Image 1 (spheres, rainbow, N blue to C red):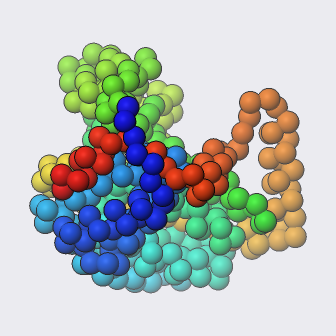
Image 2: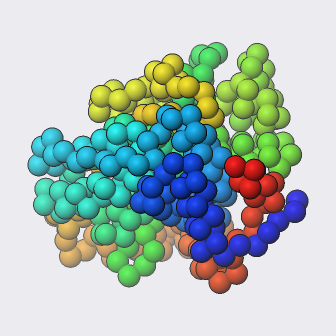
Length: 333
């Protein structure tokens, strides 16, 4: 596959200028470009420049307001609501993050429901800043129906990722981000683009037949990981990111979506906890690190996120190899 090596600054400039050319102001475009650049720099290509055409599609169709200004409302001392007013999620997160951190450090635990946003990115990029601020973080979001409930035959849940972050003073935070499906839809899209087959048990075609063809899975549906266990987690995400905060469930998001290929309007649920206020202010960090050390005594065990941090250190120096297929699509925009 033909590739072009780009610096992180070049990736950011390309993403920001492309978004501004289609209706974003500098602040909205910059927020999304930051997220895209972080994904590319950390080796998470399925959520990097590959997503840019989808972002643009929503701007061209008028579904997303590229000049939106999110509003913040304190619903309770420990609940901070952000209304994106149809902006991309990174802009709303930038607006609400400091409020969530402040509420968690005041109350010990705080939640931030985000409504009226369009989410199209990896959650780790959103939770890591919370963990880096010294807080335990959690986030989840739904999408459009792509996953079959255990025992069912039709997609009902989104891929419904969950993300958890643990702060490690003086060390990179531990953050894991995983879909409730066997594989993230972005990874299936990447496999389709690169002509790879999928492992057995990832998804089914439009007729419900098991398949390893990513194009057919994209037409059909994904399976939840671990059968009913992953299905229950996907249901939990629907309730937290939809039912709890007054936003849409995945099937409702699909019903009102215009099908432009970009992210639907929906919600996200985020929570933060201050470990200094849970009874072990002097020992929690060292105790957790001793636990991580015990894990790493075993061969082939690594902390979640370790590969991202390794990639981050390398790409800052070497740049990122970007598929020319993606660059051609962006150029055509």
